[in-house]
Amino acid sequence: MSWYDCTLGDVVKLQRGHDLPERVRVDGPVPIVSSSGITGRHNVPKADPPGVVTGRYGTIGEVFFVDEPYWPLNTALYVVDFKGNDPRFAAYLLRNTLKNYKSEKAAVPGVDRNVLHLLKVRSAQRSEQERVVSILSAYDDLIENNRRRIMLLEEAARMFYREWFVHFRFPGHEHVKVIDGIPEGWERPHLRDVLELRYGKALNKEARVEGQFPVYGSSGIVGTHQAALVSGPAIVIGRKGNVGTVYWVQVDFWPIDTVYFIPNEQSDFWLYLALPSVGFQNTDSGVPGLNRDFAYSRKIIRPSDRMRRLFNESVAPMFAQRTTLTNTNQKLTQARDLLLSRLMNGEIAV
Image (cartoon, rainbow, N blue to C red; front, side, top):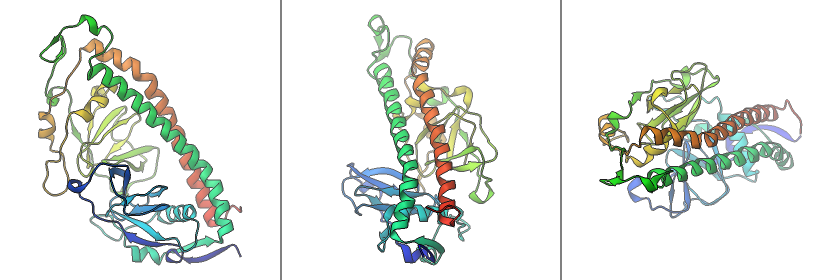
């Protein structure tokens, strides 16, 4: 019999990740993997590949496969023993098992590895595992390829921004005087004079009804919902947790209470690309947080209306292509997860 019933602990052994405070991190090539994926870099690893990491608290149900030395953070659990199973199959099995997992901790969503080890699952012989992986990894390869293309488009837009608004090599710059360090006609206002930071609204995982609208937290998309709170395109800024992260959201969405959002009428490509250089900082002593008054006190170099409009028109094709690739990845992810469920439930034979 190729498929059989067992516990998750029969397939993998999970261990809590390791603390690594911001103050002791040294920038390097090693990815730091938290409950929401890669959230930083360090100069030394704590675990060798292949790695399978999932959230211990915070973002529950996401599973990340790592093919290089990495540092699993204390907000996550990671596999320390695959017990002879295919590592990628273990990642798919864990994803399928945790997709509807309900935490017993009411305050902060969390999971206990000892509880997870006892969950009932269906596994397969190694040869069957490899066939499952060959099917599902084809989707993942396409998703990863599109993700890399999105990153390249993002970097191209950022290079464009730096050329115009950092190095001041914008069209016609040869004929514009620089006064007090900025081109004539440009300004250096406080953020409060440029935008409004609005608070997101709480939407617990238990209250969400899976739908077409993405739910944004400070680590990016954390789920979907049947209703939207904000019209896109708009900009999201991390307020709690991942302070100062900035996201461009093309579609209608729901920002939760760990973020601020800038409304549609104030959001454009120039502002999205300018905000990371403003210098947002953690202003809370406990949980990392961004105080709105502090954010408003920061200054930003604002170009003339004409130059801002010209820049937005110039990078619009890049963002349009990015949106197309993002939509494609969402459809691929949905198709993969549906196929994953059917393969694991035995509805489809391989």
